[in-house]
Amino acid sequence: MKFTSDNAERQRLANFRWARAAVRKCLREHTVREYLPGQVVYNLGEYPKPFSIRPTDYDLELLKLLAHRGVELIQIHEDWNDSQRVLGADKFTSHDPEGLHEFVDAVHDLGMKIIPYISTGYFEATDPDFREEWAGPGHLVELYFDYARCFPDSPGWREYLLPRVEQILDEYGFDGLYDDAGYPSASAEGQPIYASNLPPGQVSHAAFEDLVGTVMEMCHARGGVFKLHTRVRDFSAGAPLWDYLWIGEGAAHLDELREHDKNAEPYVVPCPDMSRAEVVEEDELYLHFIPYMQFPLRVDGRPMTGERAVVEGMNYRRGEDCFWTRHCRCMWQHYQEHPEGPHSYGWWDSCPGRPEARQVWLDYFDLYRPMVSERTRVWLEVTQGPLFAAPLPEDTVASIFANEQTYLVLANFGQSEQTVALSDTWRDRQTESRGSEWTVPGRKLLFLQKVT
Image 1 (cartoon, helix red, strand yellow):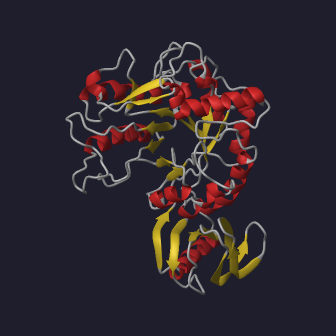
Image 2 (image 1 turned 120 degrees about the vertical axis):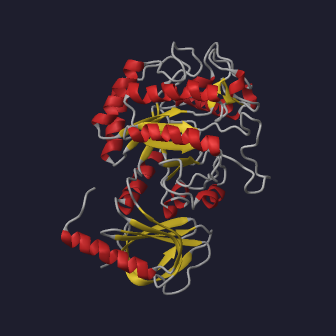
Image 3 (image 1 turned 180 degrees about the vertical axis):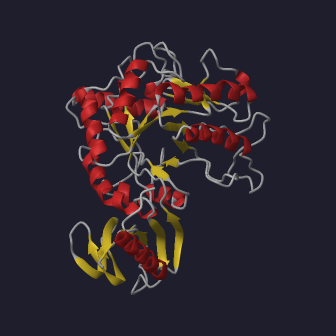
């Protein structure tokens, strides 16, 4: 752990005392520990079309840029493996192992971590290794895949899955895993696992908690991190079953997503699903999350051309009835007509791409990163206390981030501007203006720093 100088430590503790006195009521307090705020999911290629993972000059330049701007974690999606067994590998091995090793090395050489996609539930039902007793009804059938949702309490599935997950960690030098849970709606015994109409106490996640916890322990034993994507939040095991929780896929309304997950335990990495999300300006992707110590995942990497939806010989199982098939084919058509861009970079990107999106992400990350340095104490959604000289307006949120500096984020989720009266003098980090009374435009953020 890195400690500060005596003077800096005195200032840090003084800032904590001030913040503690300034907050009478808030949503949640948190102390930042081992947080990697800058995370990027990196598109590698148009699987199931054959392609090389070996880093190109384009990759090296982009990775250098991301590392230089403070990104600490690169995540690669399922295009690293061969889920359909069409390129000589399988769901747990790479179709280009030498190229993947070089890509991992390139990321490590720049001081970043890298984690790959796995799933503790989804498995291709047409795979020769699949066994019917591993899963029940309710497959995920999209694009070219027919994914069964395997039972977390199936001994056969566990026996097959866990050694292969461990091998992924050991063979490729990854720094942890991203688990797309693929959680089924029932257990191997036929008991319901989750259902919105069941009262509390009748929903059991014990087997799932155990399986996911086992995989997380594999990551931690190797000094790695574990990211989980699941729609289930009400776990009973006590401590969260993730280091990072991915949210946002399929969410069209970011206000609803914010309210649903604003109090999820750290650390949350939202991925605003721009294939569906309704936003007026790029800034909205940050408005909903930064006040709750969440920073959006950047969707980036090699341009996603959408060719994966038109590969000859592949069975696109639902045709144009499948949202993802239509979305990818939209990208393919746009790429053919506009090979120069603007490009899309992943499943959750818009079509066409937004040329300003990367720079806006980097600019907001520059503002966010110092707010969540190690040992920062955070008071999220402060609603009462001497911080305010007048009651906080409706639809406005204030969150404090205190360390050697004290930061305040003001967010206005309403449509009309609001005035926030504070008891102390603050500096706007973007405009350098100073004052104690601040006008926050509708659907905007203000980034303030306390004047000492």
